[in-house]
Structures are given as structure tokens and as C-alpha cells.
Image (cartoon, rainbow, N blue to C red; front, side, top):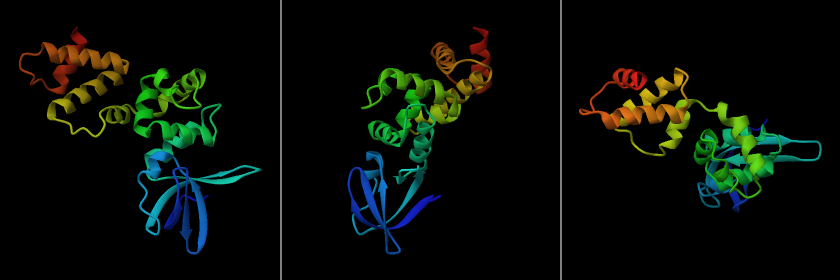
Length: 199
């Protein structure tokens, strides 16, 4: 199993890159998101790979981040999604956006990707929703935002309610309601959870 390649970029296109590793040229199929992160031709690069071997084909798929590779591997577990469609999916939405869309059951957004119909989008939600940790989804939802102290308290209170069995949307609504009714806004995580449960 080839886990990564480190070498010089001989050629790069939006769909693939050719890596010269010790005098051997490897063609690696990539999503658009990885193409955007690649350095220029003749520059050194390390690319994470997924080695896909079938009876009639041996292909290397490449990713610039571990998040992309993990999402690709998860997509392959969905019935009806092969490597090409998984790659198209990653080219249509970033791994962060996919994570949020799957966690929130956003079938409309998922089926907007070329090649993903409504039924496949629904299967993605059903089969992958439980594969992401709550904190992972909340971090993805927040994007690259820097958390303030209040944001951290809100997130922790939501996580606490989810651990008690509430759905994410429900927990979010409960905590938001407590915060909007708050006069001081200085409640601790424990107080936020207690007030949310008392309603």
C-alpha cells in the first residue's frame, strides 16, 4: 500500500499530477481542491495517496490534506459511490463542507454535485452521518472562525446536551434560547446546560 509520495512535480493538471520519485514517474489522480494547493512544476511536493487496486486497474488517488483523504475513503464505503464519483464529490464541495452537509442531512446541497442524485445523497447522509464526532462537525460548521470565550461556552454546552441524548439542532436551539434570555451573558457551561434542561 502506497501511503504517500514525496518527489518533484513533473506535470500537473486539474485532474492529475505526475510525480517524479527517485526517477520513477507516478500519475496520481486528484480532486480540484488538492490541485489548488499544489506547488508549481519542478518543485518538491509530498502528496498523501490512496492506492486503489482492482483486477482490471491500479490507480493512485492523491490528496494534499488528511481530511480530504479520509473523506474520500469514507465516500467509498457508500453503496453506489466508486473512486471517480468520490473524487467528483470532493471537487464539488470541500471535505469540511461535505462533513457539515452530511451531518445536517442537507440532501439538496449534496445532490447539487455533478453525478450525485437525490437517492445517492440520501444514502450518503444515512451511511456516513454517524462516522463524524460531534466536536469534529461543530469545528467544520464554524469554518476557520476564531472562537471567543462565549463561542467556546456555547459549543461546550451544546456538546454536553448532545451527550445527554439531544439532537444537535435541538441542543443548539436550547442553548441559543438560554443565551438570548440571559441578562448577564456570563453563565458558566454548567449553568447554561442547567437552564436549558429546566425549560
